[in-house]
Amino acid sequence: MAGGWRVWLFDLDKTLVNVEDGVDYCAALHALRERFPQARRREGLPPVEFTRCAVEVLSVLDGLFGDPPRWQLASDTVEAYELAGVARSRPMPGLESLRSLRGTRPWAVVTLLGPRAAQEVLHRHGLQPDCLVARQPDVRMKPAPDPVLRALQLLGARPEEAVLVGDSSWDERSARAAGVAFVGLTWGREQPFGPGARVAHDLEEVTRLLLHW
Ligand SMILES: [Mg+2]
Image 1: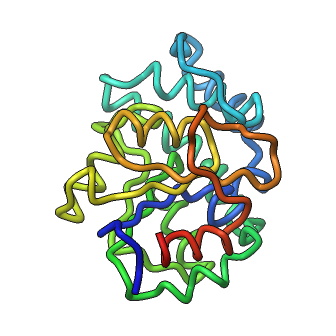
Image 2: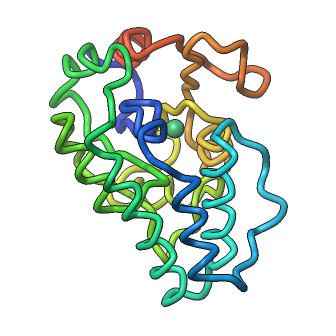
């Protein structure tokens, strides 16, 4: 019998699949700056463990939030690089163990990736969530709670019925702000999450946790 949460939410990049290391976010940033020389990065985003170029890209996109046409163009610019990286994406260790959970609970993927790239990554790795919340112009990105809340809405679940599994401090912030339980994947890092966070070292531990919590 599976554990207490009624729905499961998963971050995608470096939680289920390593996408970031196959995407040239520095080239994407360069293209973004050429196309949007006036664009300002959003200041005040909390620190996160992503590479510098990936953080800069996301800061510029977040700075364009509220201007849907420009945001969309910028997101499409970045997504071309993400799509080019899909073929280089690799499953995170233990992804196979998660497959034993198939059909047990409704689940969603909540990701900062563009929607086509996310869809291609899922397809490539045989993952079929009940819903996908990817980067979109009307939902503020993690670390805001918005994409987690959107996933709950799509799954018809309340925050207290859900858990989000993620590898970054932005996942943790997003989950906490949405009132959703959080399991942090450490991948051997020394406590990258806030005090008292529930952690798992790898996806096999996540699987056990979700089944027996
Ligand atoms: Mg991640």
